[in-house]
Amino acid sequence: MKDMFLSASRKNTAKRLVASTLITLVCTGLAACVSGAGARAPKQLDLGWATTALKSPLPPNPAVAVPAAASAALLNETMVIWRVGDTGQPQAYTSYQWVAPPARLITQRVVDRLSLQGAVLQQSVGADFPQIRLNVQRFEQTFSPDGATSKGNLTLQVVLIRGTKVVDQLLIDLSVPASTQDAPGGADALRQATDQAVEQMAQWLTVALKRK
Image (cartoon, one colour):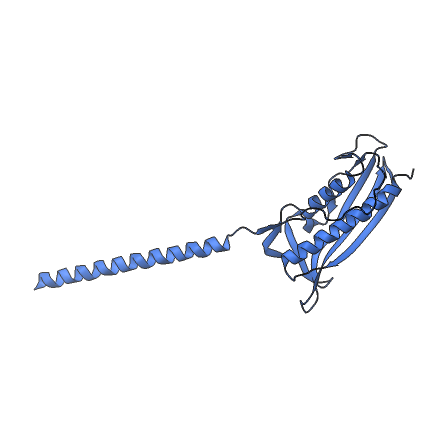
């Protein structure tokens, strides 16, 4: 009789061990799934292809240098920045990021556009060589207080330099309504703002390069 009780006890213990092991395995699997979902890579956003067509051919420019743009600290990263109102605290989308820092994306857009009118170099090659200095001061999506609307806001300072002399400068401040109130909608608005800003800069530069 004692042996029967011992055998039954051992069987119950074995069953509890098996059940405990199965529960552990299930919990581990669920934890891995949750961890995997949380670690999912952010979706990449970029400025796409330029869409601003030249309304009329501009005259060729002399070769210019366009070094990498300077920018506010937040724009040195790939974060997609948004805020509520102009004075709200800047926030970053967790599930989206730019493929490169905004300053780099804008620099490339400027180079692509100016290349339609002449040679564009990454750095100056002479003391009197014209150089375009870019400073991206704002590049973000700004929501209305009720969240019903938002805009892509871009502020870009452009300075034309020859040697140590500032020839001319331009401040571009643009705001383009977003079609949707999310990161992709904000990115599209910022793409349009960038294209408009670069075209304004190209028009201005054609005249400014003639100044001595």
